[in-house]
Amino acid sequence: MSIEAAVDALKQGQVIVITGDRYRRGDMDFAVAAQHATPEAINFLATHGRGLICLAMQQDRAQRLGIDLMNPGSDRQSGRPLGRSIEAAEGVTTGISAADRAQTVKAAVAPDATSDDIVSPGHIFPLICSLGGVHERPAAAEAAVELTSRAGAGDAAVICAIMRDDGEMARPADIADLVERFGLAVADIGDLLARNEDGEHAAHG
Image (tube, rainbow, N blue to C red; front, side, top):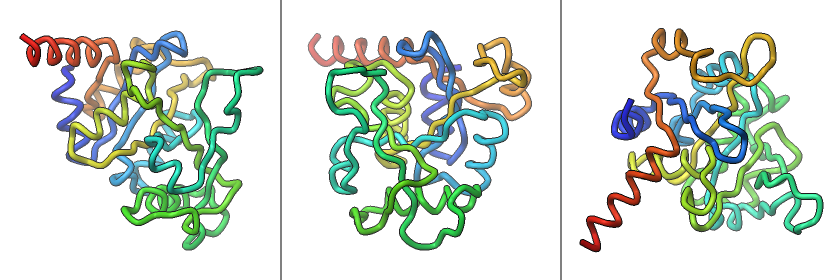
C-alpha cells in the first residue's frame, strides 16, 4: 500500500503497519496517532502486536514533560531512545489496563501537558525521536511521528512491535492474513524516505 493510504488511515484514527525499521533488522510495528489511542486501539496493539507499547514523541514534548533518555550517554548504548516509563498522574488505577494506558497517552499528549500530568515509573514507554526525524534515524518511532504529522493528527504516535504467535518477531508474510482481515494500511520506511527525497528534489528543481 502507499504512504498516502497510511496517512489517510492515521487521519481517520486507524491503526497502520510500519515496515522496514533499519535498526531492528526489519521488525514491524503497529502505529496509531496518539490522539486516537483509545482503549480499543491499545487493546488491539496488545492483542495482535504483543510487543512493548511505546509513545513516540518529539524532543520538545519530552522536555515539556520532563522526560529524559534513560541512557543519554554513549556508553553501553542499545541505540533505542527510550525515556523513563510514565503513567498519568490522575485517572488510572493499576496503570496497565488498556483504558489506563490510553489515559496515560491522553495525559501526555494534551496540548498543555507538563511534568505535573505524569508520574514514573509507569506502563507507557516514551521513545524520544531524533531531531532530524526519519532521515536521521530511519526507525518506526520517527516514521510513525512523521506520518502522523502528515495526517494532521498531532505530533506523537503510539507504536507496538509485532510478534508472531510463537514469540518470534513477525515478518510481512506472517501478518498478511491480519492485514487483510482488518484492512490495515502498510507504510514502508524506505518508501517514506524516497518520497521525502523526491519532494526535496522537486522543491529545489
